[in-house]
Length: 379
Image 1: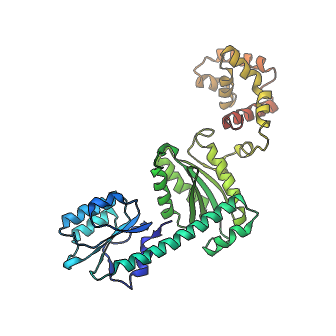
Image 2: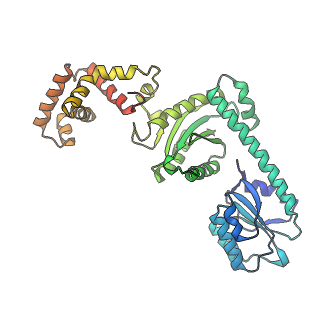
Image 3: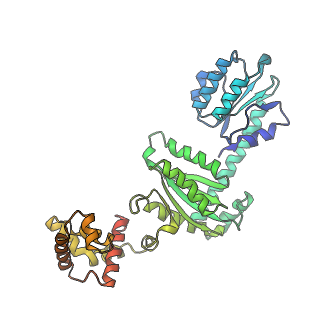
């Protein structure tokens, strides 16, 4: 719900005596504005604030550098400091801010901070209301797709048009949950707002729900792939790309399916719906009792035998199918002599009491293993 610092600056640049000293605003987004005079008060900041300072305490470059370092540590969005008594920031300090990618502005002593802060506050509040409306519209598009009047107006009024492409992404990183919140998730959200400028993002049940508008799936897989490679504790599901606003709910449902299969069923922390294969069908079950009954009919006897005799025949059968039903490859995978494995495979056939190599039974066994991979939600 923040606003680009460059956009805020553009609103007042011609009206007030403010000058950008650093090479740019470095893509910073501002959540609020705050007046801070003393370094001791900086820890009270929440982050992403544009800080105003009168310059009265600006007695040396050393003080200024320490003050800037404290703002950077508090994740402030930038600094506007008055040139009190003709103080002029040194080139060395400006270059330091450039290296730290921390935007700094100077103002004249006569610049009415109260007016600038009021104007920025109005812009920020207006943007917050816009974001709230868009988030509500997205939720309505996901949960009440048939009620187009609840979301199309807000979308189109804010540049999300009917003929754009829409992709929903779901992301979580529960590992970083604490009693005070999830700072890592907030950091990811802020970064995504910069990377995906045409997007709507909100948090729900500890997960980020992201609607990316107008982006190719290749770009999205690249961006989120980078995030997931850098941190294996992040899980991402990417839905289908839809061509109509009214079909956003389809992308959400597919993203949620992909997200649920990450790490557990499929050992990846990033999944795109298009690569789910047979799981597209299996995970879309409408009748919960179908899959347990199917597995019981196909592998029930073997599961019961393992439980009663404390054997591992189900594991052996799974390895056999994972290795394309090849005895030699399976024996190597299990570190078992092929003759011993042949004996165990014959025992498995006797327990199941059907030909496991017929085409129909091979398919049934493979599907059963896929269902077991889905976990307790399905079996």
